[in-house]
Each structure stands twice: as C-alpha cells, then as structure tokens.
Amino acid sequence: MNEILDKLLSLSAESEVVEFKEAKTQYDKNKLGEYFSALSNEANLKGLACAWLVLGVKNDRMVVGTSISEAQINDYKLEMASFTSPRLSFDEVYRVETESKTVILCKIPAAPEGMPVSWKGFHYGRDGESIGALNLREQDLIRLQGKHQDWSVQIIKEATIEALDATAIAKAKEKFKEKKVGTHLYDEVDKWDTATFLDKAKITLDGKITNAAIILLGKPESVHFISPAVCQITWKLESGEEKAYQHFEPPLFLTVNDVLARIRNVRFKFFPNNQLIATEVLKYDPEVILEALNNCIAHQDYEMQSRIILTEKSGKLIFDSAGSFFEGSADDYTLGEKTPKKYRNKWLVEAMLNLNMIDSLGYGIHKMYKSQKQRFFPLPDYTHSTSNSVVLEIYGHSIDEKYAKLLIERKDDLSLTEVILLDKIQKNIAIIDDAAKLLKNKGLIEGRKPNYYVSIAVAKATGEKTEYIKQRGIDDGYCQKMIVQYLQKFGEGKREAFEKLLLDKLPDVLDIDQKRNKIKNNLQSLKNQGVITSIGKIWKMSKTE
Image 1 (spheres, rainbow, N blue to C red):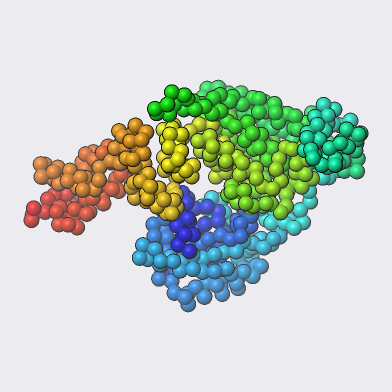
Image 2 (cartoon, one colour):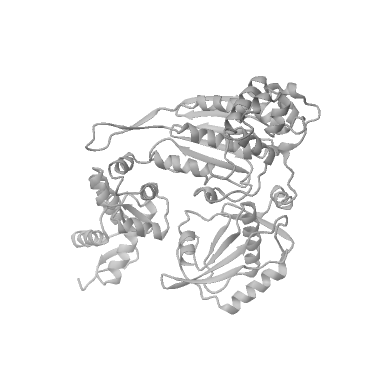
C-alpha cells in the first residue's frame, strides 16, 4: 500500500477520483458522505474500479498523520452504508506508515453500472478539486450504462447509395482488399458489386445506409441525413501571430488525409557530441497523427453534436473530441495490455477496422507512446481530458534537446524510460518515489522530493555545467552562513533584507514562494540552534554569540 500512497502523493493536484483530508483526529460524517458519493460517481464516469479518500494528508500533500481509531472507521463504514443509495461502503480501509506518521487510505468503489450513487438523496460529483451536484448529463450517462444503443449502426431510411461518394467507395474497396490478404476473401472482393462490398465491410446494413456510412463515405452534402449530429473536423493554426482554419467534412475516410496535409511537418536535426552526422526526425510522426484523428472519428460521441477540433500550435498538436473514454482511461492503454470489451460506436469501429483505419485491440495509444519515445519527444498527454471530452496533446519538439542528444550518445547506458523520467524532472512534473530512487541510484538526479534536478553527471555529459549550478543553487549551510555574516556586519535585519540577499542564489527549480519558505526555514533553524534571535520582525545575533 505504500506504493499506492506514493503514487497518490506524487499527483500534481487532486483529481476527480482522489481527495486528501487532514483529519488529524476525526472527519465530519456528512462531508465524508458527500465525498463518497462524488468520488464513487466520478470513478464510474472515468471507467475506474475505485477512487481514493486519503486521511492524514493536507491538500498540498504534506503528511500530517491521523489518530482516527478503528472504532471511528467502523462508524464511518456504517454511516456510508446507511445513507448511500444504492447501499455502499468502503471496499477497504488501509493504514499506512510513512514519515513516522499514520495515513489512512479509504478505497471507494465506483458507482455500479447504471446506478449513480447518492448521499442522503442527493447525487454529488466533482469538477477538478471542487465538489457539487452531479450534473444531469452525467447522471444520465451512468443511468444509461448497460442500455447503450449504438448510434453509428442506426439506419437512415431516407438515404440511398447515392448519398455516398463513389471515389471514397472505390478507395475503401482497395483498402478492404489489402486488409484481407492471406484470407479466402482476398480473391472474392473484385467479384462483389458495390452493395455487397458495403455490407461485407459493415458500412451498410442489409443494403441500408447507416450513420457510419455517411461519416466514412458520405458526400459532403449528405451530412443533413445525420443531423443534429455533427460530422466535421476543424483544423486551426495558432502559432504566434499566424492564424488559420479549415473545416473538413465527409467522406472522412478520404478527408482525414487532407487534414494531415495541412499540418506543417518539418525535420528536426540533433547533432550528438563527437559525431559528424546529424540524427534527423520529423516534427510529427504521420502515423501518430492519423492514429489520433482516426481514434477521434471512431470514439467521438456524435450525439453531443460537436465537431472534432485539431489545433496546431508552434510545438504541439491538440486533438479535442466529444465524450469521455467509453471504457477505462488513457493510462490503461499505454502499455498495450488492455483490450476494450465494448465501444460507444461498435458498428463504426468495425467498419474502420475493416478499412484498416484503426486497431481494435487497444494498441493505438500504445503505438503513439512508442513512436514518441523512439523519436526522443515527450509522451502523448491526456491530462486535459474531462468527463465531456477527450483531449490529446502530441508534442512536436524535445523538451530539452540535450537529453535527446544524451540518449543518442549513451543509448547503451540510458533507457528510454529513464530519459522520459528526466524529461518529467525538467518539466517539474512529480514522479513516484520508486522512479526517483531509480534515477538517484544511477546518479542522474539530485535534490529532495519534490524539487529534484538533473545531477552533475548528466550536466557534464551534456556540457551544461553552468545550468547545473544554477539549478542546484546554494545549500542550507551556505545560506545560514550568509545570514550570520549579514547580522554580524549590520547588527540586525528583517526577513525582507535576507530575501534580497538570497533569493537569486537559491535553486531555480524552486518557485518564489518556495524560495521564501526556504529562507524562513533557515532563519528558524538558526534560531533553534541558539545562533540568532528575533524581536518582533527584527532578527539579531544571540547574546551568547
């Protein structure tokens, strides 16, 4: 359980499924019930098995410990079971010792399929760290689980094959045949008429036009057949002062390649030390762009009447599509070990699979992660997704070029995982304790949690010694020495004077508040040692000195 606690503490902020409470001696039962309802509902919406309520930890992740007893825990369990509907309580409650303090992890089960959880008759939900009413749409999303109807397979009675684009059909037939190489269908495809092919590819159903058929192969003027649903990809360029946009409509089977063509994809060159030949990579992997776009098409919630938006920034692409992950979360698919059991648009997914547009085994996200790793760029980022939209960011640059160089030059010494963790350090993203331990054991990072910085070993290897010194800053001993020297010279001083003296000498990995706290802590340390004393806001040397 220590590993789970470390992972929760490493989060950069509370999320819809994790809540920290100080709760040193007790916690209000009614507030506990509200959070139980909210966390349970949000876990369901995110496709997770559980959520976590952590007692004995402040919102800023400072561990303060709790003395809540087993009798109190049993009382909380009974209270949850008595006033939640459906009747639920904590799956497990764990006591974890960390930093010589006790922390309690309360494992809250996700709301059962089709049944949002209420507390005393009211359904709670979360928006980031805030708690409030579970909105009506989210309640409906939970209630309709298990009753989901595939919008993409619905028949459009008024539409005929004339609503489909002939060029798109011909190209789709070619791709379908390529997909069937090595099977008995390969030699039969050319004998099929158009209607047979469309049924075999699961684009039409018994010769009738489906919503999926309009999305993939429909003529642009045929979109009215699926109204009020929206089938459109909007590309936006937002790069400095450059602004542009273009809308793309069906047949998306073809126009997705037109979207790809709008993206500016130049080559990056890395010049490793001691090598004359540059290593080149494209700013973006075209296969990653198509994978991301096709995932948006396949899994978009079309009933939310929203277009797919692709925003091109100077250094990244942002894909925004309506609807949450239908099963699980992005993290579940990064290793390529999870296969989804169900889809929002099953008919559309099968058609896109037959046309070789997507992978149905859940490997799509995994392939995007692998590509970004192999090209020395940051991993795909889903952290801005919400319960109403999936937001994917693909980076088209290295966070710090010297680490890409380092990987090229020391490929036998550093794994891609280690380089990715170093990227996180550079981006000031928290990493779990086990990851930090791995990097420290290899001499790649220094510092204390959460303010790690790249070690002198890496700085030397990349020619960044000056940057290393800047990141490391002065240590506490030297900081205290400067404070004492100031007081010995001037007799007294306020904290503002010490800040003026020390702020620019402290590590750059600390923000301004952290630097001020460090100065405050050093003043207090000197006071505790009996070296200095304070009278109001004035600091002086102790008389014994």
